[in-house]
Image (cartoon, rainbow, N blue to C red; front, side):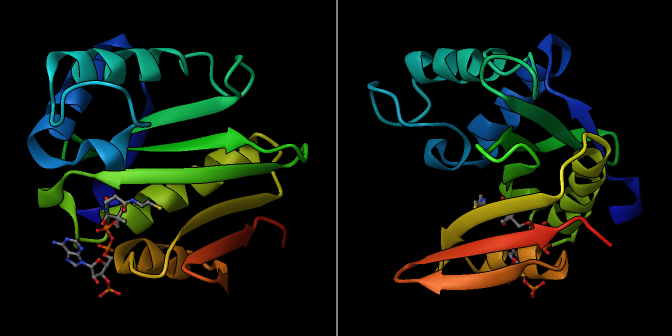
Amino acid sequence: MTGAVRLEPVAEQNLEPLLSVAVAEAEPADVMPPVAAPTGWSHARREAFREFHRANFGGLDGHTRTAMYAIVAGGEVVGMIRMGRRDEPDAVEVGMWLGRSARGQGIGPAALRELLHLAAAAGMRTVVADTTRENRGALSVLEKCGAKLREDGDRVYAEISLEG
Ligand SMILES: CC(C)(COP(=O)(O)OP(=O)(O)OC[C@H]1O[C@@H](n2cnc3c(N)ncnc32)[C@H](O)[C@@H]1OP(=O)(O)O)[C@@H](O)C(=O)NCCC(=O)NCCS
């Protein structure tokens, strides 16, 4: 399975499949910023999901300075991984999510490794992330990809060097 993981830039042709996975298999809080809308996957929240992703179609050099990729495994869209420029010119911050049925199979580490290649090709030297101490899945993925972890209260800050 992991050998077949690839990333496709999020664009109109994979936006509806991505939304379908999010609605069926993820919590809004895991996949998009909070919006003022009825709880759950209301019509307003689905529309906000589309607009949130469309705003990032410009990629690293667009106005949001963020590139988003659909994670494709076994030919199906199963989640999303993104990198956003930080203030430092050679650093990006990463975030990702998978639908519940795709978790625990090594797809997250495979997708992050693909993203590290894309970040290096874009001239980045450092990839950072932050999560909570409770998010064992995220911490496991980051460690598998060589991140150095630093705890600060409930937060854990991760740094992956692309040099060497
Ligand atoms: C974090 C996430 C991307 C990990 O990807 P993944 O492909 O599941 O990663 P792995 O297959 O390497 O599994 C990682 C850990 O998840 C745990 N896990 C196993 N099965 C799982 C399942 N069905 N559901 C959730 N977690 C599971 C295991 O602890 C595993 O750790 P181990 O391999 O050290 O035993 C995924 O769990 C996810 O989308 N979570 C919700 C969104 C999120 O928290 N994103 C990160 C925000 S910083």
